[in-house]
Length: 205
Image (cartoon, rainbow, N blue to C red; front, side, top):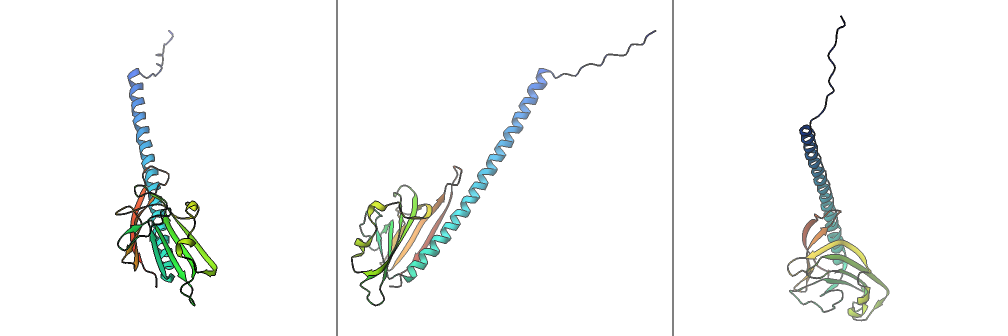
């Protein structure tokens, strides 16, 4: 008599098992994507913080060096509004003047820093540095770059916003300049890195 062996059943998933597996796989993929996005955001934010700290060190060091060897300063409302700021008020345009050693009525160099932005909005800080081979006896206002040259100068800080009234340079009794503001970096994500800075510089007079 011929022996019959049981037929091997083919394994198959039920519809419920397929649905459960799909849901679990979706949850795992979602958690993985969330983790990757957060990790990328965190890395971009940390990179932004490093750039902010770099900008602050560079800005404070450079501005302090220029101020130490300058003879005078003038603060204006902005690069386009050349209204001079009085003691106890702030503006977004700082000019450091360097005078001839033999004749202190002549200018040998002007260094200017201005924030290219409104009081409500942030903007980059830009710098110009003009050296005169022949010392100039014109008023400082006539030696400044034209208003039309706004945003044509070297960018020193990517984004900044003044504190208090939104302006960057504070005239401290006509003797010193207090720089108070906030440096920002967009990075490549919406979350931006920021840091505040506050330091005082004084021309040698």
